[in-house]
Each structure stands twice: as structure tokens, then as C-alpha cells.
Length: 277
Image 1 (cartoon, rainbow, N blue to C red):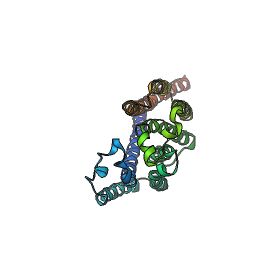
Image 2 (image 1 turned 90 degrees about the horizontal axis):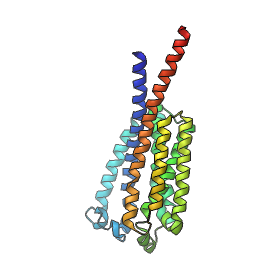
Image 3 (image 1 turned 90 degrees about the vertical axis):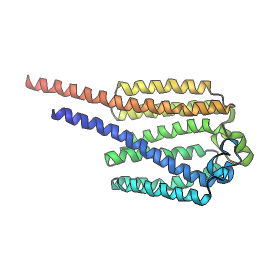
């Protein structure tokens, strides 16, 4: 019974880690979106797809949006202060990325890289929030794989607005890669799967995790092969299909950890049996 309780707690902890990482990612993303809206409010009305959004359409004033942003930041600070000191310092370190990311479309053709570095900070913060600190052998490849994934799906997303972006002087990887987009996306996908495999090796993952990576690879291959970068509707469809990729990886981690616990339990029983004999 004690061992079962320990095993259940361990599995619960792993699931809580994934939930925490997802929630922190989501919260960071909301704050970034709000902050981004402030910086891009002068351009939103010039982009057909975003012209009807509240700030661009004038339904919400800049002052009101700053009040809402302040509320988001205050709540985010409240969550951060509930974590351990290591995580508080790590979370504070992400502020520079959060502040500078919205400016990147004016500066570089790689704003999607800046988004990846910012948004996937939750992979580091979620781990440290549960474990107390970051394990570089797991956290760094996990972070890098997230950055590669973001580069892939946000490049697809950016292809929806490339015509308007070019007219108003904004930059993106969609404009940078142009007709070579699929080759770049393929490279990002290989890098993502490679580093996720490294994460599995360094964290002693099991068969379900690697099966999930095979499924992700199949999904990415189909997504890139069928992508039509000149059809905004198709770009949107491919972009939103990345939710499936996130779900597959999440299930692979959870089921892989359950498998790992079962395997460990069986090994311990065999050792105990040998000792008794």
C-alpha cells in the first residue's frame, strides 16, 4: 500500500507539472497578447484580418486596454509570488523578452523566434515550479523544441497577413522564407522532434512517449506537405491543427510516465523476490 501511494503521488506530481507548465504558458501568452495589442494598435486597422478586433475597431480605448493589461500583470505577479524563490527569479528574468517581443516585427524578419523564446519560457518555469529548479539536460532541449515548434506554427500563421505586413512595413518569417517556407518548416520539425527525443532519453521516458513522437512526426509531415501558403484559410486551418500536436505530446508524457511507474514497480518486485529467495 505505501508503495502504491508513493507511485500515485509521483504520477500525480508529473501530471501537475504538465498542468502547471500549460497554465503558466497560457497566462504568459495572454499577457503577451495584451502587451502586443498596445504596440500594434496603430497597424491592426491596416491589416484586413484584424481590422475588426476591439482596439483596432475603436471599441476599446488605449487607456482601457492598459487597465486590462495592468490587471493581467497584477494577477500574473500574484501567481509568480506563490512559487519558490528560484521560480520567482526565473519568471522575472522573462520580463525583458515579454517587453521586447512586440517590437520585433519592426526590427527583424525573425519575430517568430522572439515569440518562441518568450512563450516557451513556461517550459522552464513550469518545471522549476514543481521540481524547485531546472534540470538543464531536460529543460533546455524541451525549451528548444518548443521554440522550434513556435517558429513552425507562427510562420504558418504569419502567411495569412504577409501581403498587408509588406505594405505597412512589418516583418515576419513568412516574408523572409517566402517560397522556401516548406523547407524551413521541415528543418524546424526535424529539430523539434530531435530535441524532444533527447528529452525522452534524458528523462528515461518509455514507449508511449516515443510512439507519441512518431504520431507528431506524421502529423507534421502531413501538415507541411499539404500546406498552401497562398491561401489564408488553409494557413489558419494548419495553424489551429497544432493543438492536436500539443495534445499528442501531453498524452505521450502522461502515459509514458504511467508506463515508467509500472515498469519501475515490476523491477522492484523482481529485486525483492530475488532478495527473499
